[in-house]
Amino acid sequence: MAVVTVKSTAITNRDATPRVISNPAGVAGAVQQICGTAEAANGDSIASKYILGQIPSNAVGEVLKLYCDAITSGAADIGIYRNTVDGGAVVDVDFYASAQSIAAALNGTEIQHEADAADAGVGFGLADIEKPLWQRLQLSADPGVIYDIVATLTAATTAAGTIAIRGSYAV
Image (cartoon, rainbow, N blue to C red; front, side, top):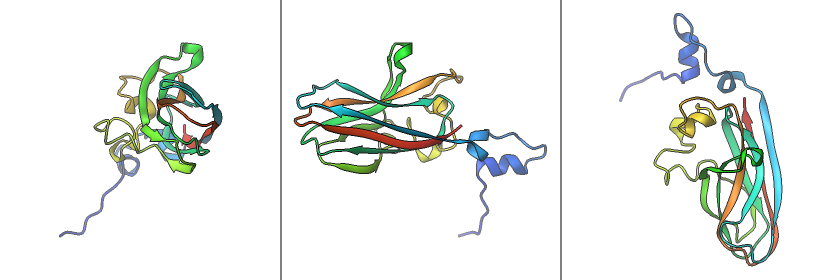
C-alpha cells in the first residue's frame, strides 16, 4: 500500500503551469432546477410518453429524482429526446433509467445512475461525472440545444397517477 494524493480534473487544471481552463459548470457553475409532472391514465399503453422536463446539452452533474403515485403496474424508460419544437425525436430512450418500475409509489428515487451499467458506460457513470450532457451522449460537439426528459412506458399502466421528476444541474 502507498499513501497517494490524487486530484480531480478541475484541481489538476488549476494547479497546471500554465493553468488550464476547466469547464465552468463543473467548477463554479450556476445551478438550475428541473421540476415537472405528468398524469398517467389507467390503460396507457406501452410506448406512451410523458414529457417531464427539459435540460440543456451543456448541463453538468445532473441529480434527478423520480416520484410517482402507486400506479399498480407500469414501468418506463427515462431518456433524452429532442424537444417537441425540434420534432421530438428520441436521442437515447433510456439514458437515465431503463424499465424503471412505477407500479409502487416512488418518493424521490435517484435515476441518473441506473442506466449506466446496461449502456456499457454510456449515461451517467462515475467516470463521466465531470462531462457535460452532450459528451455523455457521445456527440462530437455541443449542439447548443435544449433536450426533453421523457418517460416512455415499457409496461402499460393499470391505474391513474402522477409521475414527476425533480432535479438540478449546473451550466
